[in-house]
Length: 294
Image 1: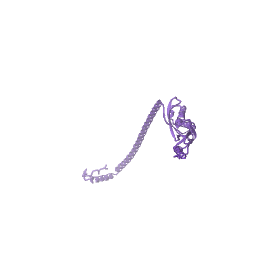
Image 2: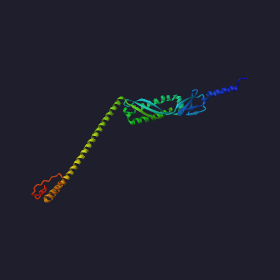
Image 3: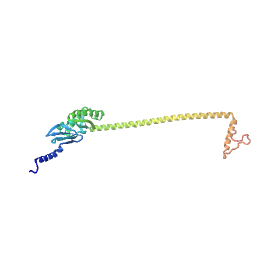
Image 4: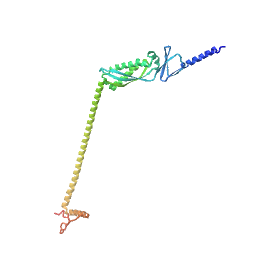
């Protein structure tokens, strides 16, 4: 009797083959990716989304494509109607169209090939074409020029790349570098404009100061006029009082003598005050009492 029966040998071989091909009976596609398979060099028309796929043909050869959004940057010299070239930096945001992954594998092989074969040449061509519609290189700094350029590039790229398996999300102008002599001229122009603005600001400051000085002088003039009027009123009042006093004293000598007595009383209240008699034989020997006498 043989040591191993044919059935046992077949079982062992079957287990070995199963273990050998077990990891090829399923496939996991990473998140944000799609997969395309080939069998003996022939591309299958179906594509595989992210996730686990089981069972699969162990003879399949798998090709992964990243379907997440990516950005391609491009720098190109763009000629304008004035025959000058301006360096323009552009960013293109795109993502792979998953269902078209099998045709991409057939035509360009990889995502890098797709970008190099279709996106880059078309983008450069569109930049040159759009530049021909711009009259002067310095017009690139105008907001409407940049907006028009971005919009035209985005529409044209979307139309072209859609059939190639690329979904264009956005086209953005990152930077614009004018020819050196234009940049120098623009900087000089800016400096002149800044100098003019500075002079205008200085002139406005001087005008404001002068207006303030005029306003101050006008206020002082009005204040002086008001003060003069006030003093004139006071002087008129005092003159009126003096006039009345003169009239009163001229017509009433007794009133003057009464005021003289009141003054003497005030003087006598001071211990250091001295009173001198003018004429002892007079009926009014005290000082001041003769005021009002003719």
